[in-house]
Amino acid sequence: MDGTPQEITTLVGREVYSNNGVFVGEVEDVRLDLGQESVTGLALGELSQELFAGRIEAGKGVMIPYRWVRAVGDVILINDVVERLDEEDEDEEVVA
Image (cartoon, rainbow, N blue to C red; front, side, top):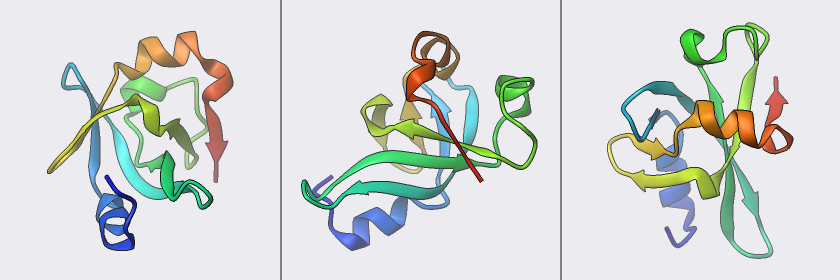
């Protein structure tokens, strides 16, 4: 992705799945590094209750680092989120 506004806006609304096919959530917003003109994170809402039960308050979302993204197409594939959340809790941010 080269960071053009048209490409960034197409990320919003896409479903996010782990690389093993488990639904994670839906992109609600993106976090940008304006200096680098790049996407640094994806804010997810409509989270999978199965994956996030007991981790995230109902009605909240998560910010995942963009480096977790493996592929962007009709859906976005990321590294296995359950394992990653356990390993890298410090990268997880709860957003309203």
